[in-house]
Image 1 (tube, helix red, strand yellow):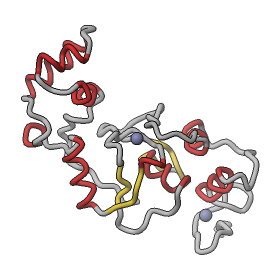
Image 2 (image 1 turned 180 degrees about the vertical axis):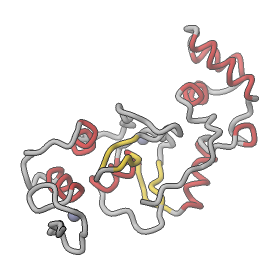
Image 3 (image 1 turned 90 degrees about the vertical axis):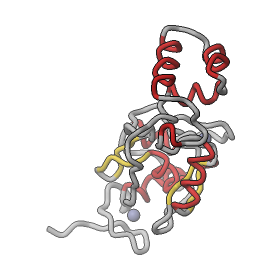
Image 4 (image 1 turned 30 degrees about the vertical axis):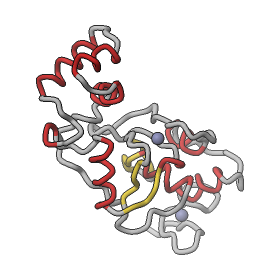
Length: 193
Ligand SMILES: [Zn+2]
Ligand SMILES: [Zn+2]
């Protein structure tokens, strides 16, 4: 069956609306070239209407187990920050990661995103304490047992600041532990899509 292709130059994706594929349709909408006439879901609408701010914008929908936001795009579940980059900035250059300058994995603010090499991305993760190596991470000086106790105490209603003081870590580190950023043991998954 012959599928109609997107009219953007060199785009091979099937058309979803206005002669454009999902990505180019959304990008045109984002740039105000066309009015919204089709909805593909709250997630994509969210990514097309990101407010102008320098604060982190934490993805309010589903997440992957490693903390990245998940969004359905062109029929697949993809990392929300990567889709945010594509819609708000442009194509992700081949073989580059989309990295967080803020170190907050669920953040989708395009101002905090940059396309960079894998090596530089790993350096970032170590700096931000989001590299998944548990106690091998120089920024995480806590044992798995301490992490479990931190989670338990915050879960029981103790203030993060108080718990942080007791364990000699920063409140930021406690927050990261609570949202699962600092203690993801799963292997570093790469996404090249
Ligand atoms: Zn297209
Ligand atoms: Zn951010």
